[in-house]
Amino acid sequence: MKVLACDGIDSDALDRLRRAGCEVAEAKGLRGEALIAALRDTQGLIVRGATKVTAEIFPACPQLKVVVRAGTGIDNIDAVAGEAAGVIVSNTPNANSVSVAELVFAMLLTLERHVVPASSDLRKGVWEKSKYMGRELSGRTLGILGFGRIGREVATRARAFDMTVVAHDPRHRAGAEGFDWVRAVDRDEVFRVADLLTVHVPLSDDTRHLVGARALGLLRSDAVLVNASRGGVVDESALFDALATGQLRAAASDVFEQEPVPADHPLLRLPNFLALPHLGASTLEAQRRAGREAAERVLEVLARA
Image 1 (cartoon, rainbow, N blue to C red):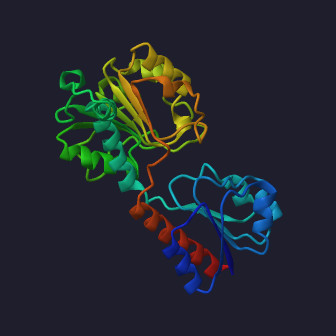
Image 2 (image 1 turned 120 degrees about the vertical axis):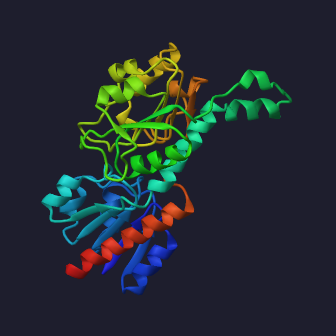
Image 3 (image 1 turned 135 degrees about the vertical axis):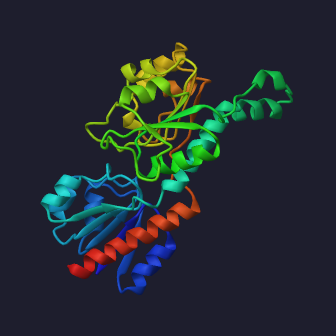
């Protein structure tokens, strides 16, 4: 069996496939016809977020049995076309949760303690403590939009910060078992009561621009928004307006509708906006877990083929 690994999959995972008897090829930057050519006589494909497995790939590669994204979500894979072609499309939902949750608090603390501008000033010889009066997370209300694996990891860490936690999940009304200290609320309420709001829903037709002008208008003017899910979940034009007019105090995003984000993107000009280049899963631990889970999923499917 042949497996193509794109986008830089963990080497231990590739060794696992080879030990199981698979012929493994590695590639980066493939798309369209180049990806189809690389998949010739290949039964398994592992990708991260960079490779787009579009609808035309599947009929052109009838020998393909399984496509796995080493990460959360499958929005870069046309799962409907894959299913129609009899291809198993999967991901590694458990791999990135801890890394993303930790990054959420890195962004919250960076914003609330003015880490970036204070460090920048200090490097310029400016020592001005009073300019950067911050705020604690303790005692404040964290709203979590989306209470799946990552949302629950965020809630667990929020408890350690002595925060009050409210959550809404678009797919499930009931609170999660084992999280009775998290108050389940409706969607509008999670915006209204949150001092800080973090977004953790997958990108779909139902969630695209879920956080738009109306939802942002429900937030308090001194609230902070963090998006570490998918760029399309937040309406970037509405977010710009909210930040530029003072309707929203600050925001951070690890994800954008277009990635890489254009250097002239309006949000990047705002001093109250923190931008990161999709670092949520970029830890050694997450990549090892994602690679291992992806390899095992490929082997599981190919063993049945």
